[in-house]
Image (tube, rainbow, N blue to C red; front, side, top):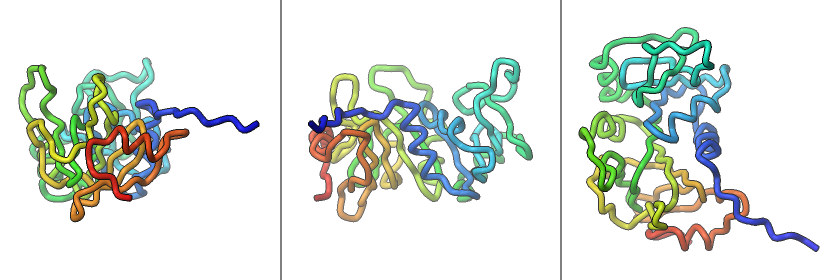
Length: 218
């Protein structure tokens, strides 16, 4: 008798690993705060991907082991990281000039909501105090490609993939690809809908559609 495969949504680490597969040799990539920071642990040393951090680091390596920790080497989320061979540090002004000048190929960002036209809301957490939009706006508009990585639904079971964002926007029409714990979806901005690329193990198209408060292409 064949067993029915039970749905196995991706964990945060598995979502990061799936996002790492989207990166190509030669890409300059900025990793946002949250799940995206885990991507550095899923890149081989010879992957040819150059990680950029807006606080002034190009050539960011994976998280350090205990005996490698240097409190002065941190990412934008204030987590200690390593510097890859050939990496460089510089001031924040130069770092943002790289972003605004279009020198970042891919930005992988966390999100609270993504609309079916690729609008991104990722800087204001409902009910929490925030300092401001920070560098998210620059990355969302300056990177050549934006990948959003987030849980498909909130803890209350509310879909984060929506027809129209209800939270304050970071940028309009910037997201190209969405990776959630349930699926990978491409944004078809012109048609105003998501296109399903891949489901997590055992997750069906019907389950993805039921968890999505937006138009999913047939």
